[in-house]
Length: 117
Image (cartoon, rainbow, N blue to C red):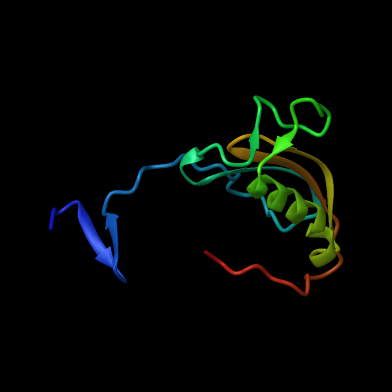
């Protein structure tokens, strides 16, 4: 096997993963209440969420979600059912990523904690 590649649980991985710049502020506590701007990209930045250049609810002529995009939108809408301390202010679904503006206003810990990946 090439020395730049190794295998974990049957998955072949590269030893040297790409270096990413740190996107978080070092001293900021992200568990604080406040407004947060979040971007989530699809794996490999593959365009699977919608058709059109900008798939925004404000542009209904260009807003054609794929089946995967419909699942994503339903999940966004349902976030507050599982995390009552969050409010979705605005969201935009793009072909290969989504943008969210959320408000975190919590009084304690949520009952549903996401699993770590």
